[in-house]
Length: 304
Image 1: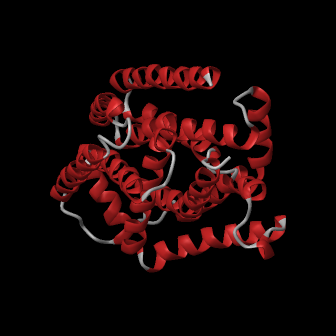
Image 2: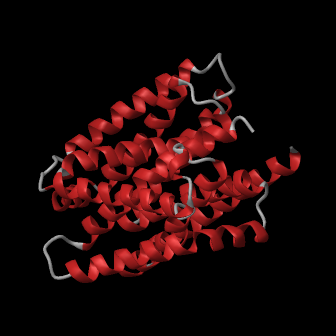
Image 3: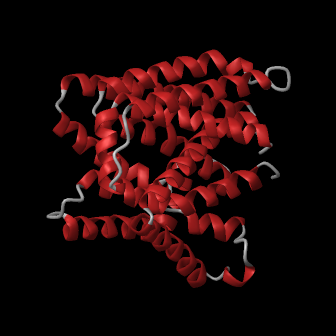
């Protein structure tokens, strides 16, 4: 148990140091450099952390036994991604709301699951509200640009004032839920650290460009810890060997996702859609099935 805790603490310290280093880059380099670094991190660690879903389903159990063969799982999973993309094309505003909700829960779940354990209703609300706080902290910090991205995806102009309002409501709910857990768990031990961390996110989000700020959170504070969790639950340890196993089993889907995005960009590069709306729509399409798979993985991990 001590060895496992030491690894967790070491990873957290590395994440903190990396965040301050990336914050320094945001101060001394321009937006072009930031966007290049952001896409590099997102297309490597960011996409990779969600590229091993089929291996997770194979090892931890596909919900429908009739679809458990490798080919059937691949067809079903890719079909889910395609349906998600169609939802963005047919009903973009609804798809965006679902994407933000899924992402909020997913970010919060990954952040709190190792300290929470079971998926009780109140704990699920904690996951969701925490994720909303992080997302709308980012949206509020880049309100005008986020509003333009939403307009590009949905055709709807969202008043920037709403980002602040949703942030305040989410933060209030998060604090209430955290206080409700006061006598039921040891969550209070983490309260001060979590609010200091949110303060750090606020600093990063208001210093870096939108894409670089998103990349810092998405890669450093979500993708890398998620990769660590997946290595523990799939292979029992975090090591070079387990990391190489992970890359090997996820390589096809990882490369396929990058090729698909590249083709979409080449086809739509001269359209009025814009590269940021295209990028976030693509990210949303691959997020929906990934969130369901990881929730299943964490749920089974509790009982092992």
